[in-house]
Length: 100
Image 1: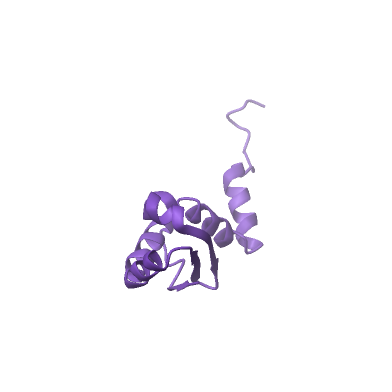
Image 2: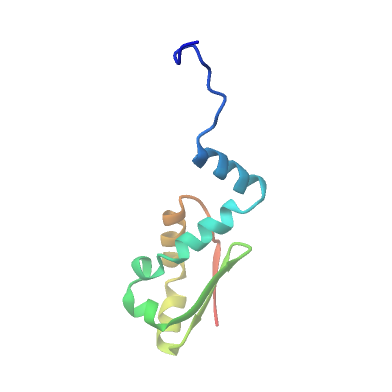
């Protein structure tokens, strides 16, 4: 039997892993982590340096900012943050931002 006649029932590893993660409900969580890793690029170094923690839970981005002035500025720019995060993700990954 030649290689040309042989059928392949295999699936590319990338597709298999993506399917598995989706089936386990982990695909969005991994994407959340990947997007948050780009925080400095998305929001700038000044914001990144004042961000103590960031986490997404149930489509809400929780930010702990160590500067009250920066926190107030970011609060006024919530829609910009939401747009940048969602644009990076490629879909609506967050709907609101909560500041601590």
